Image (cartoon, rainbow, N blue to C red; front, side, top):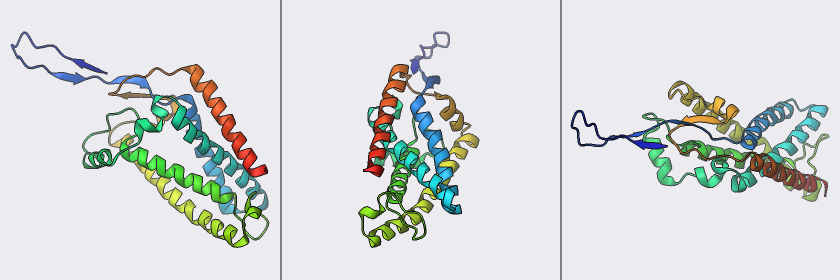
Length: 239
């Protein structure tokens, strides 16, 4: 939201001073926020149950993995069909954007409402790593009492190879999660921007346009996309 100040008639200054007004707008829709916090919860469950490795823990580990895979598929589809700021095309960074952001990262906060270029890049990497983690888990086999629902559809050697990727990939995912948390801390304590609150309420005070969100589109369309994602995962693991 921009507003141009008029000329200062009293001082006789002929120059025009353009100011950009900060505007409190609703950025993150309900489906995006629910996806974020559900994913955080399921990732914590998966990490805990995967590291403890008990019989019952592995049952919960597999169930949380199915939920994570469903959420990732939902986010990809929502990134193509969702609301304005949730769409990938609105925050997919280019090389020039990343370069400019790197040169000014400590000088001034990001002016847009959505993710920063580096933040968006990290989000894409995290989504890819989560998809790899959940996907390889479907074919995993621990040689004890747990195997993924698709382990029997590949050779034993392939299953063990994918199990190895499953065990290594999680640490790349943890590293990206730590970077994500450090970035949140940087915005909180250096730029005085509360990103956690924004992901809870959906609102941010930024220098950007306010794009109205449709409650009908948020709830109905997101529910349909989620059902489609869940059905896809159900069919995958059962048939």
